[in-house]
Image (cartoon, rainbow, N blue to C red; front, side, top):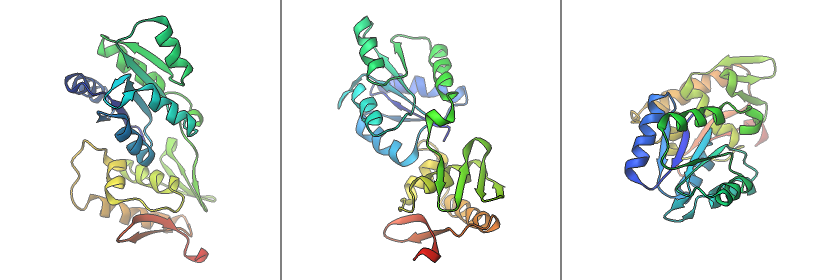
Length: 227
């Protein structure tokens, strides 16, 4: 996923940052508390997080520590009004990748986010592999053995989300958010069309995996031969 998450409770500042990033071609979902960002990141897997230290549910560093404790290396840029050296050191030692003190030029924030998103993929994310299937996000490919097929952007994000779930179910809303973000309007049948195309592409590369839909649980990848 090329989207980032912004965790900032100051509504005006959050909107200004979101607009600056959007203008720079970086889609951004905004959260006003850590817990909401944590839940969304578990489901969607953002490319980077921009986190304010002063949040309604605590110090933003707690979210960074939680991510690192879960083995997630997602790049994190901290925003703070604190300019003391020990505050910056504390942030970096807690696992943050960069630190920006308020007020700051939006151009600098955009440049730093871009720098974090250019980090090697091996650092930013796990390999998206499940069963006989691999999603090569950097190349936009769905691969099974020697066979591969190109994925459209929304298909790619859905495929990554499903593969990372390792056979577990994803709610419809989670897959829509993975493909189009939380801020974008989604037409009612957009997910159905994307899943239809993905099913055809799974078959075209010869994968045993199938996308199944359990009404009460959602969508997931399953191997019919393993049942």
